[in-house]
Length: 165
Ligand code: FES
Image (tube, rainbow, N blue to C red; front, side, top):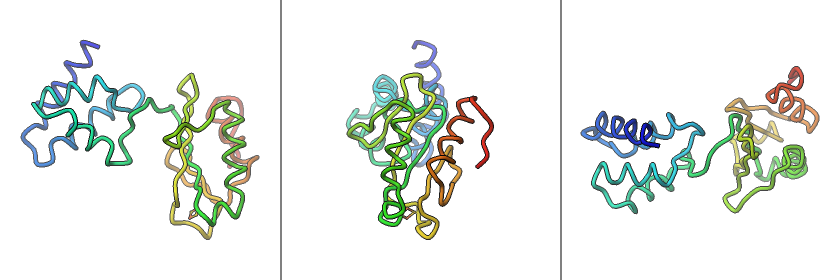
């Protein structure tokens, strides 16, 4: 942890005089973290380094959806739960993926496998309703995706077999 705190101090020193420094600092702290998230210790260290109240740092970290407060999987699967995707089977698709990975959604609407290989999120709408159901895998949008295609894609990411999607 000591090395990590030193690294955070370096990040803070690089950005502290910039406009919007806190946002830039949190972005870089998350980007350089092992599991793409901001831990309580890291947030506290950023607050101390900037002599800001911890509550101010938390309010920024919780306001922006791109900040994660829990460890994220190496691969991120986001299933759309909007109306168009729901109508075209996104609920059973989501349930199938969660069962396949052996995880359950937590209160914040996400779940990560114990080995941190996969995180599943839901989203209200990708804005591509005509292509429902829509799922993003590692930031790549897959439209009109079937359960079989999605499970094959997961297998490929897990190194089990070739993806065909
Ligand atoms: S409802 Fe799924 S993309 Fe809009």
